[in-house]
Image 1: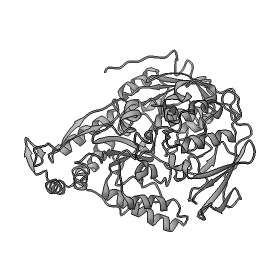
Image 2: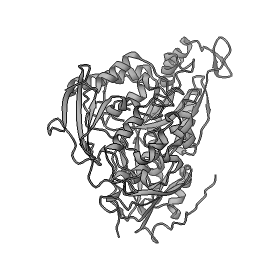
Image 3: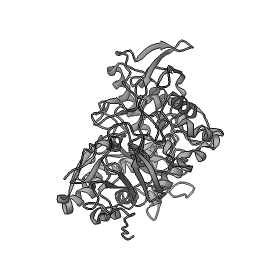
Length: 555
């Protein structure tokens, strides 16, 4: 998420959903295969890439970041800047440095039921977002808006309580249709379960993209049809079906059989699987590998009394041969991560603290932490308790399950007992991670935008609790006052030279404290039919589907 709103997936069963793919109907219908089903369709509750991907077909943000990594307007006419007068520096009522930013919603913009998208929707979204009981993930961004001036039905000014380097990026202000959702918000504490996005998901008025979601079956598929009130370029496909196949081997089989036309790069095969697929079937498809801002890691439950010890966390890192994992599993195409900041990002620190594979250091740290005794190869503390952790991830993801097994083996070498306990993605993200129900380790990926300040994942104010209706993304429970202060100052430092120094400090605190264990930076593999054109990978958190109207079927 950007700083203003600071804020991500046996046997083979093949079925068709009534859609015949490839040659028969590829010109009018497109079937996409992905590996996860959204836990909720509400755009501002919970963070899950599967939801962002399908919303790219059916919704549009006010602003976004394009494939060239530039902030652009989607629902607004002109991106406001200090230079063009759309943004104006001002003082807040208490005398601090604030900013006023004015946007004009496109005149033609309408919800899928024909109702105009207007400033009332903006104000209502803000009211929901800042309410402490709403369950919205990135509440901090909404709280920073002091007031909203309605200039007319389509024009509004945000008065924000601080000046940030990305002041005009409001990509996380995902509009809610006030004419539908206001009635659902009468009881804010119950809103999370009452929202029409989940109780009436086929309501046309929830959508405003090139497509509307016509039907869906939980855990199975979503069908999108052309939006009759879409104001932009007419999309090429009459219907797009997104099929969810969590088992990646089954996903491959469906691609080869014609059950799906393409596999999403954002939520499809891993690089190693795609490379193997390309060797066997590459001539039949267009296969593209896109490195991006995707951080595979293990969130640690810092409320766990064992994992609270920094020596344990650092020992876990030294015991891992992540370079071997990258080279042997991914052909070196997915580099080792030393912090959450990707080397592709201009703020990356090449001198960040690192943890090379060093069993001697790992063993010494574990001894110092009080786990020096061993029984049948497993370390014990003075009370005779084993050094044992559960590790969880998304069930059916072949690569993640393989990585788990490698981690389990490497940690066993230093006397740590690892138990694998996986769940379907919609449960893992919708309940276990979001509500901090994992006991020790949760392996997944964050995907971000360029220079994205990790406020909601690292700031102690963003730890999800029952009291805040599970808002926030600091699932580890990380608490560090120095990190809190750094996160707050980075986004308000407008000088790039000074800001990059702050970023370097952030990365080194993160790498030293280790609230999460960095594994590697992922690349996305897009496996597309040769007749599909116009799909351009972005390399960041905003999916290719946001430009679906540019996709076309060619001979």
